[in-house]
Image 1 (cartoon, rainbow over the protein chains, first blue to last red):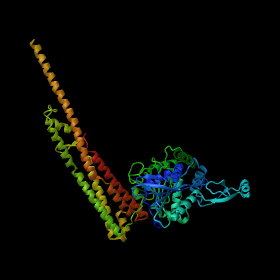
Image 2: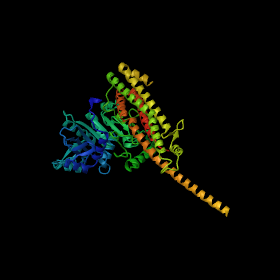
Image 3: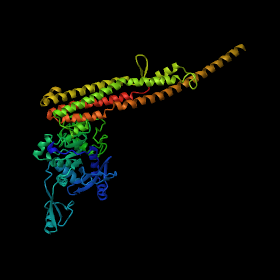
Image 4: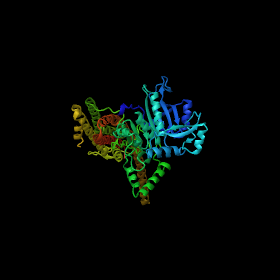
Amino acid sequence: MTNNIKVPNVSDKTYFILNREAYDRERLDDLMKSGKPIQTEKNSYWYVEKIKRDNDTGLDAVVVSQGKKTKDGKWVKSDNPENVVVAFAGTDPKSQFFQDVIDADGGNVVMGIDPKKKEHYIVEKDAKDTSKTLGKYNGTPTQDSMLSTGNYKLITKTSQIGQADDLVREVKQKYKGTSTVISTTGHSLGGAEAEYSAVNNNIYAVAFNSPSIVKLHSEEQQKKINNGEYDRSIKSIINPDDMVGAGWWNEYDRHNGTTIYTKDPELSNAVREARMQGDVFQQIGQNAGYFFQTAILGMPDTHWVGSNNFTFDKNGNVQNIEGDELVYDKNLKAMLPPEVASGSGAIKVTPEVAKQLAQKVNAIIDDLRTMKREAENAYQEHDAEINDLKHDTYRQVGHGLYDKLTLEDVNNTLKNLAQSFDKKGNPLFYDVHAEKAYIASLKDTISDLEDISGYLAQIAKDFKSKDKMLANWLKL
Amino acid sequence: MENFNKLASLNNLNGDQEDTLFIRRNQLQMLKTGMRVTAATKLEGIKTTLRPKFKVDDIQKEMNSVYSSLLYSFEGKAQQALAQRISQSAQQLISTEKDGESFLNGFKTR
């Protein structure tokens, strides 16, 4: 990982919630004034430190710091927060169409215009707040005559992506020399800003449905990105059906770090291929239609940072939206557990680590063997319980409530209720096929983990040959 | 008259038998309901005992750290190939978890 970028102990879910909060301007203004925190998860409170908006460029950012718990259990703002997150709101076509959609999405993201390119704006000479100027300076005679009065001046601003980068640099500088970990997050265009500034400032980022902006970086940075240097520090969590996040036209080659699709992209890719049928005009029509339908009309909505597009497990890790346990790592082209796909905090294997990992896997194998024994012996508990039921009921027949019934009636009733019978004709109240399938599955898992443990044990002994051994192991 | 008396007594006998049959049928139905409820409680108890023994959450967590360490110790094509192997292993573990759940859910009356 580049320059040992610190991975914050902040869950995907917390980033997701901070993204949603970043869109609610009024609430953020209130929280800033009142000093009340945002709760993202149980025991996760965040205080608004700074709000930065620019009506000219469309920048919409909030800086939040993680609260701390006092001895008497109250949450308060910390002078030395463990984490500070800069969250960027994304494209807002309703209120900032020109700034977000035309200038930033169209100009920077799609056309690749340098986000650091400065443009001139006219502002009153004594204006203290320059976040809203009188407009972009285009050299018109009216603007020139205004300037000639001496009551106005020109100031320069970069794009909102450039401003995002400057804000992150400023925040990083503020916490320089402290233990506070700075990270960024954002959705859509805000995600692009989070990624862009994370690359330039060597910090961690989690973006949601963000467009690829790799080409906005310098040649040198692009090389690093393509070498995977930010794969473990920048995470783009993307719905593969979303055109903004997965590709306007063809699928993006990559984002700045690891791209995690919230489901297997096979079907999404097939739909994309269908959109690319026909001549170029048909393709434009089909793609524009799909964009209008999903991103504008939301039928279905593929883009919003909502629970219809992103869900999380109990540990706050992003989940497969279709309910599977694995997500798709686009860079590695594999369905992986979310924690593995992000790779955050993974310890690199050394001979000693390999030995420890082999031991860990062996301990897991022992647990699975115990599990298998339990499954194989589960019938004993079942037999004992059913036997109890039979004999308890025997005692109730032939008198009282069941005076007209016999032991045979009990046996027959038991048979009627049973799912199947063993070889001796005893009633069984469990699915014997499921029992067999489970025991076989445990056997397969044990064998699979023995295979992995075997490789780890081998490289622990001869670490230098780990690549060769890997090739042999995987039969490459 | 004699014939009439015989017929009347036969009718009475059928009525008693019918009553007995009716009571027996009711008792059998009650027995079946009672045994179904008791069996379901006992089977639920078995599931409750077995479920924690078949939990793989911790195993998955531990294996994820092993997978991550292994995966990020390689680069390029070796890493991609290893990712496929790890994906296969993770899927096998998930399938075992699901098979365990199906086995437990299979403890029930017909």
